[in-house]
Length: 283
Image 1: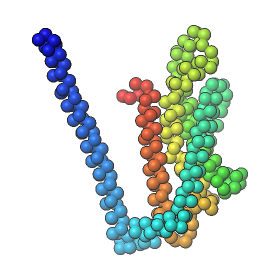
Image 2 (image 1 turned 60 degrees about the horizontal axis):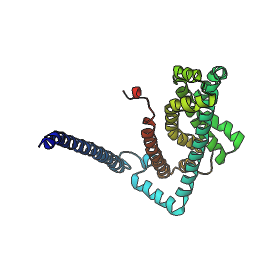
Image 3 (image 1 turned 180 degrees about the vertical axis):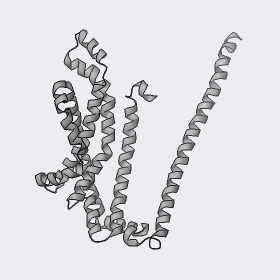
Image 4 (image 1 turned 45 degrees about the horizontal axis):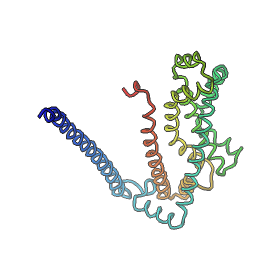
């Protein structure tokens, strides 16, 4: 009897907790379903409204219409034009992101460890960061031509500054008291970097990597719009030059799909980044 009385309260308390957790999960799941359904509704309403207004309230020359855009996508897909040009743009984005992110992290850690040099170069780096990247495209064309290399470097330049600035900011936020404590205990420079600076600055590094993903797309497409004979930016220019509005929107729809996929990757990386945030940052 004593054993039964001792265990009965825990059973009575545990059951309501399980019920509450189940209800909470159902509520969150239900909210996600409602939000997703609302988004689909907004998208469907926008497409239907566009289809109804195009050719009646607004000239097809300006906005085309969804059925014509879909037809253009089908024609490009059958001819292989859509896949080949989309792959070129995706390749520029990926190569530019990897190159720019790696350079941003390495330079960020390198300059932050050389405080005197960092203080000297800081205003110059910020001045370069403030320059619109589209203004660099003509110069890059002279240096690298209009091929894949120019777009990759333009995307990498855009990514570099975002990753570098966030990496440097993350390193500056490392607790100096903790660094001094490790030094007093006889820790080497390599141990200091590996055990203190790298983990403490990781939140800033991951934030930079997360923010820079969409900007890799922007840099690649800007390069294609300025001068290119391949890629989705080229399809936009080529369609616009022939007044093929449906082609322009078809290329934009493809870019939107790629951007949505990149945004999903950003959200996944964001959830991973949140594990590195200090507890104080969550409030």
